[in-house]
Length: 520
Image 1 (tube, rainbow, N blue to C red):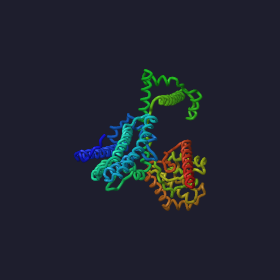
Image 2 (cartoon, one colour):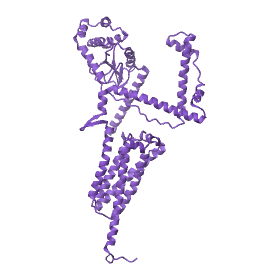
Image 3 (cartoon, one colour):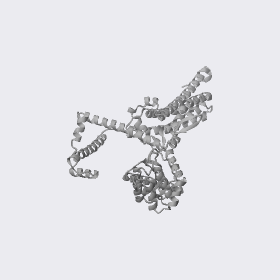
Image 4 (cartoon, rainbow, N blue to C red):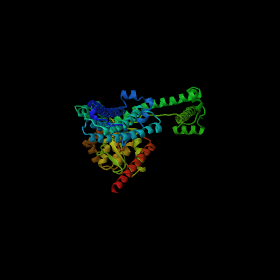
């Protein structure tokens, strides 16, 4: 083919060709910018799962909750959408800088870095798509859209880099700044609200933040009690719905009704034997007669039917895809002041049990026996701290608490504590004085303490701390700062103690391993 002489052709021919190449480069870069902005928008929507837009684009029935609530939805404690926001915004900065620079060499380098970042993002998205479809067997439209955007970015970034290597154009700094400001203005409100939600900011007034942590510290255990109560109500509703759906599906499959299905399952349940009935009557202190045996027989049959029903539902659940996204509220550890507490056990014990109690409360007396067993079984691992919380409606609780404080001045708190609980309600002045005599306390010193007011001041300080922590009743038991209830069976408490000891050992082991690695 003959060489074309540029001088023999109109100048506008090559000028138009170069302008077309420049436009192609600009289009490729701007397309990548739009895709990066779109990806950042999708990631911010994933962060705001409670928004109406998120609900519209990612309905529950599509499987969004299964993906966003799974153990794969966060890495190093940070939700994956935040990584997506960082990825897309970083890529957008590279692309806008390339669009605004006048240096061809710098533009090519920036676009090359953007291509490398796009490949990394697309690879991560491919892994997440495999987890979504292959492991979780769910479909999240927004997650899938983000993956498609990241794949498109690889193509657009590669095209922009290839065209930038072949031709050049003057950078558009003003245009890049304008596009950057648009992206910032459109994303900032969502990012700030997402950060505030994550950091626990509930309200802002002239820059002053009011956080969830502040609320939990001020409202204390009362807030946690309300949260657990709400959770229990919600869980019961979810349980009924799940069980109803399972039974309805199985009844439809068997071409029968739910009552008939349950009747067929419960019909095989046998009533309690005479030996079981006698044992239950003996535990209640009743003699066997036709009148007493009949309700016990019904009671045992009802219990067995409930056990059979639960077992049947658990078996049904294995054949259906059941996903429950209701999360139990976290239990926040409270900072309980132990300066005025009466402590039994090693101060550095791995498990610290703090009880707020009232000597006129019968449940408190029962819990005292449980805590004594815990100290006996775990003498080196458990510390028990007693805090005074005499309830105002208990008229003799305050005098008893003051007397216990006065016994503590003579080193006999726990002995006095045990005898007060053994009184089972008799907290008269005579009974309080008789306990002091039985323990060989200095009676003059004891009476002086009762009259002085310093013991009452200690009791009132403890009561104020209980109210500060949101306590409304007794007993209130805390394990390592977390409220675990009021009255509790010993087996349940022992299980919680063993769990806390196991967690403590695991944490210590992890720390030791980390120290060994650092030493290397």
